[in-house]
Length: 497
Image (tube, rainbow, N blue to C red; front, side, top):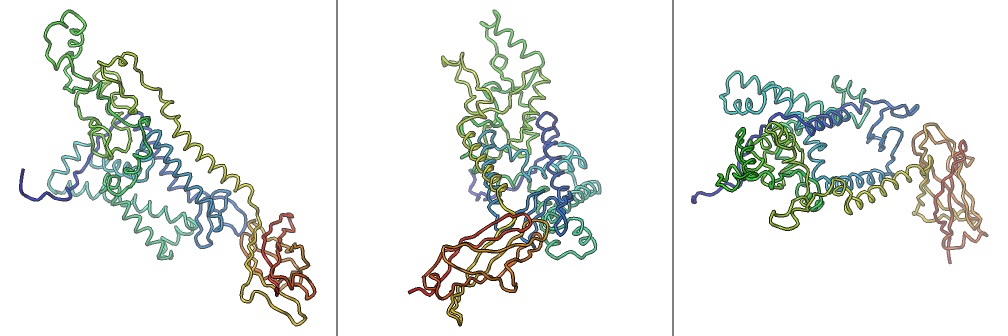
């Protein structure tokens, strides 16, 4: 041992994943293309909502405090829809993790998607794994500068597009695009693009696996979502060990000797007992996290399954069955060969790992929240009102002895046309209603907007409501075009005893 102090932090070792092909790599390409296509193109999709309404399919209109998603419009007081969607997202993450481990991290996490894109650019410009390692160790000559600067420029363009696409979700995309290029956009738009450009460039280009290991909390939470039945990427060590270099024909000869008379003779341990793993390091070389899956389950593993593709490719070349590295559960580990149940042991089918008590519970909760949101969405009305009694003063005594209460009524017209709203009230006592600034009880509310209307409710001196402490009443609003009605309960304050 050395007496010199050990560093608290070790420098990052650059990881250069090797190119690999296979089922899971192809699936990752498709997922990356679809998710990036949705992210970059969705703000440009148009949706006709009629006059005086935004025609962007997905828009978070912070200025008017509303969110538009296709035909759905979420108002500020309906934030429970957003909360419900966030709950569904959390339950969905729990569901997939309990069934398939960190499948979200390996396939659809933004950090994974953009890192894959940046690695694609890096491999395209600098070459595959060995070429990039040689470039890392090479001197800073013209060629190295040319390749590095070219890569950084492409990364920067992708980062700018990423930050630019994000701000398009908060205002009309074509209009903002013109304003950005003509330098007429607000400062917050440029600041948002700059911050997102910098984070995308640094996280996807330089930090990569460090974001997953040190910055993301999910690797530390996932253990609570997983159990012995969870399918995750693992190494069948009972089949692969002990490892050894592959020698053409050597394994076949050893296998033949173990089933013939030669089996009783002394055969070198390496020839007889060698497992299927030839220690080629292919699984390590393709891993974007730089780990060795053969060391067992590790916090750094994002379950991207690229090691499965790499190992299956090697197994095909040496004539061994696929699946040395595969999706498996702790329950799939066979007992020791000397145990009696070894002969009758069989791994569970995949569907039994997916459909378990935990996953069924998460699916049920997820469905209940989703159905509740759909029910709330379809029963909501195009008109709404909120009533706020004016508390200072709680009532006014007029010259004729009558008692008046004042209310601020906020009328909400969610339709795309101007509507004429008629106000009325119901109560067990005799009360009269009047609108400020109007001789009638009707008021026109502009399309897709709210209107604050002051309302007066009066009880005559001889009416019981004038002398009572409080009287229950309900204020109604009716859309005269569609006969849709809405109401809110409130109270009328009298003089009392």
